[in-house]
Length: 115
Image 1 (cartoon, one colour):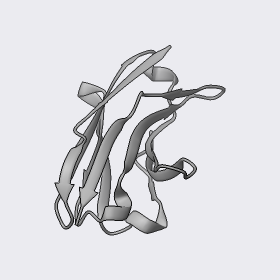
Image 2 (cartoon, rainbow, N blue to C red; image 1 turned 135 degrees about the horizontal axis):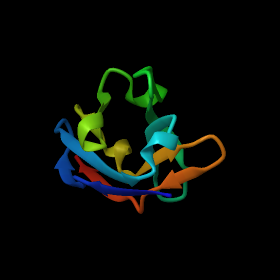
Image 3 (cartoon, helix red, strand yellow; image 1 turned 90 degrees about the horizontal axis):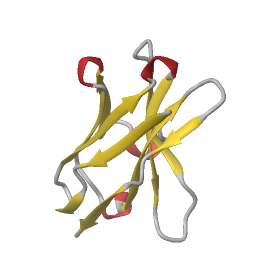
Image 4 (tube, rainbow, N blue to C red; image 1 turned 120 degrees about the horizontal axis):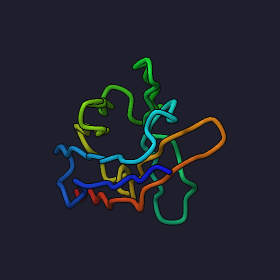
């Protein structure tokens, strides 16, 4: 089992920045990749960014060049640095961890961007 706890969400003005954190615990050796997803009201959950065990990253088209995913293995922590935020970035952001046969999810942290 793996537990994921997100933090760092909040209210920010358009153009501002936030950094999300995801503290992971449990059987981390089973995890192949981790990532951030988001879900806005009335929309499907979508990939924001992901990073593999080998540090290969992948970003959703809407956040490329603005968001950066990183991980600190010694602390079992995943980060998402979000810059140049836009109102359309408003969503609940979820931390995700992928094992071979199982997906783990945090409960989410709300990011609200106002103009």
